[in-house]
Length: 235
Image 1 (cartoon, rainbow, N blue to C red):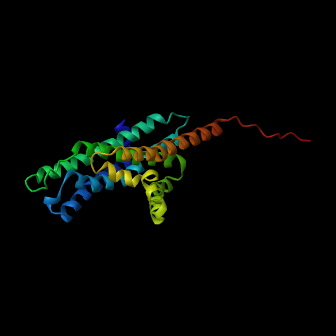
Image 2: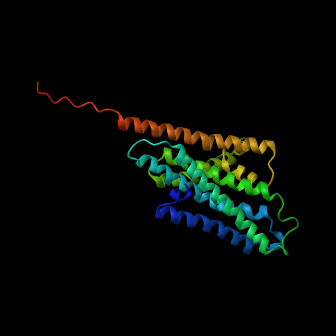
Image 3: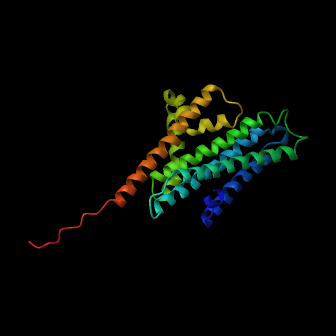
């Protein structure tokens, strides 16, 4: 499934760029912060966040296959394949962070491995959530470049708009992915944080993809509906 998901040359390039973004973020942390300040959480934030920008592009490209299929196909296998790619990216990010800490273990902060399990799992959830944003917008928007831009502009634009109005600022945690990304990559989550992430998943994951699949089915139905021949008889 993973091999098919990145089987084309553009997707291979995208995979390379995504993983390189994670490595670059890790190197940026290494340059900007002295090793005594390194913890798994401090590394995971920039590494996973950098990769999560590109991960939705996979989803956009993969759901494009559904529209190009010669006959209607089920969306679920494609969505599962996209989530598998996202999970691999999340695991790769965790391995980068672990490798950096391992090579500097004598010089790092106190308890650098604190909450590593929760943060590693959070990284996978971050990438899977980002991927669902990509598949949802990829189903709803065409051409792909529009969907690419939307995966960045829509969630971050809504986050900025809500933050600009003080009374609406608390809603960002419930309506936009970015606060949940920070929570998932910081360590164990409180029940309120899980509730906020679940709300974000319903909106940006289940909501967008349900609308997208419904739109895809409607397009397929319209394409396959019998055409009524024009009446060309002379009067």
